Image (cartoon, rainbow, N blue to C red; front, side):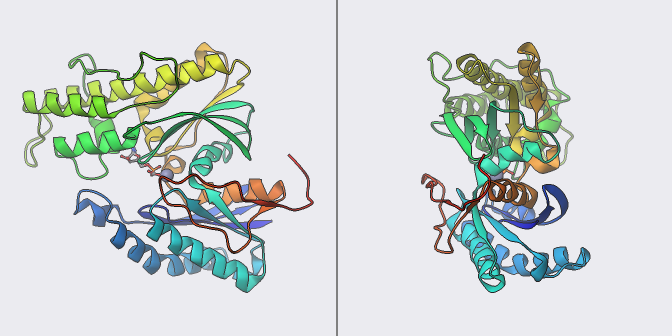
Length: 350
Ligand code: KG4
Ligand code: ZN
């Protein structure tokens, strides 16, 4: 069973092939350099670039694997949440292919696909508690099977990645700042600056990062921490990045522990999304799993960021359970709930 996955929800055009659950190959065109000129993703430019890249990337992927479109058995595509204009490029391409080839089509929840990426290189262990940390979302889930996600908590304001990007921008890092701040943080002293761990004095599993962002920006200004383009990073800038990174990591850890406590049957802990590439967050989350004697599952850093493999793999998993979409499936922008509108054929259940 050969599944093509297409991802175009933000600023990466990415396609991948999964054959019988194994990742065969993937291609990706990043627009990060273009958007860095504007300090963030410009939606209009993003959709235009997706339109430019999606066709040539498809040809490259199929050509280098000596495959033709007729070899495909399923087309999976990220259907949201994301930038509507960007998503529509991938969705229209995927629907066109599926219609022309007369093969099944499935729209994938981008956030669930991030989480399911843990299964590309690991055996799934259910039920799981999963933390998704990306540029647009911070979600805690209980996951009972690939088609069953229960949202336990989410960010009320900024996502974790957004906090990295916005604070990093004030420091003088280019967009997206998360990876660069992580590198700086690994050379600094995390005890140097006292930053708040906000929104913990409650019983819920939601997050709020806007207070930390405001406190961090005030601290940058008070201490004159702006990065200079010419000089190497000052020790206090490295220390600030370490202190900020630890504040984010500890906040994530506390709410994740709470989720595990309220789901005592959870048998594994998952971490996914672009921010899951963060070395400090990875090691803290791994310790949480170790405390509870459960396995910690996370994709390799390349599979944490937006990629086509996670879409193709999620498409494969759901199709194995008999799910697909009709070609009138709606594309869902950020901020709207993804409807439960998959069709189920008479196939094996799971
Ligand atoms: O999942 P993703 O690739 O795209 C979205 O769906 O949003 O996540 C991108 C986010 C950006 O905010 C970026 O700054 C952040 O992931 N990021 C990191 C690291 N690598 C990427 N944040 C912290 N540490 C990193 N190592
Ligand atoms: Zn993403």
